[in-house]
Length: 70
Image 1 (cartoon, one colour):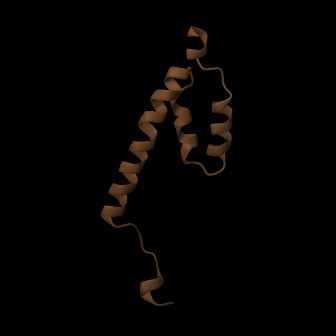
Image 2 (image 1 turned 90 degrees about the vertical axis):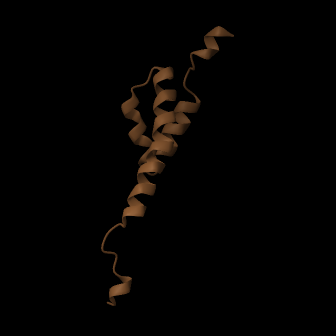
């Protein structure tokens, strides 16, 4: 197999982009989950394929605290 076709690892700029992307998604999601009474550790589910979609459906139909104020 030619050397160009082998993936040997991530470049530094790719790692930086991944970290920024994780922070852009994880920080607001952790705050939302905390306000809903969920543990912030559930933020990890946002990065697991298919599980994140199931969790979004669960979150969509969960009782939100703002509904008590209306």
